[in-house]
Amino acid sequence: FCVKNADVVWNVSPRIAEGRKNLHGINFSDKQKVVPIGVWSDKIKRRTFAEIKNHQLLFLGHLLEKQGVQLVIDAIPDIIKKIPDFHFLVIGGGEYDKILRNKVEIMKLNKYVTFSGWIKDRKRLDRLLSESAFAIAPYDPSQAEYTYYADPTKIKDYLSAGLPVIMTSVPYNAQKIQDKKCGYIVNYNKESIAKRVIDLMKDNVKLMNYRENAIKYVKQYDWMLIFSTALQSL
Image (cartoon, rainbow, N blue to C red; front, side, top):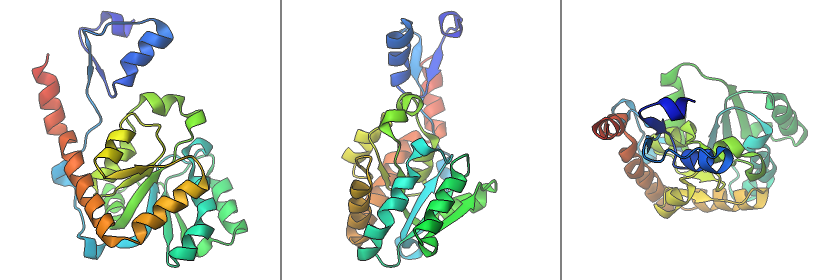
């Protein structure tokens, strides 16, 4: 009803129009425009490479089974063989929180994993993002119906803080992020995750380049630029 009667529809990803057509037979291509999730670039405080914890991996988000954090935990024993001081910072909460904490306890990985819970203070959150080396978004492809059509906010949060992203191929822009060398696409298994984490953490030159590429890539998603473009097209 809304799509049919609105003058203009702003979709956060190109897959939304595709989904409406394929799943519901709704096709108003002339009024549907892609207006992606953005970032406030001028409010972001980034750290120099010398200031970051270059062996810290970060996850931010709702803790559900389909988010794949358990695979990162499973990969830690292989990662620490090559990166002994590896650390995994998990920011967020949810129904899978206790299961993940118990898993870390059982695997005796407490020294390598920190669960911070949800952080409502945006300045503190930005600080924790900026001090990490890179981030991860290992969505389960078999349970990613929503994410497949969306434009996950945390991907933009990661990139805007200068964090390259290791992710599965679920987000619509995953391939472009990999092509721009500010992220990697991995398979949904612990071996693929461990390989990419080790690859980035053992090569400071590559990590530095990927961090610079992340900042360059995300500039196109400044909210002022997005709104200006979207409003001019009305």
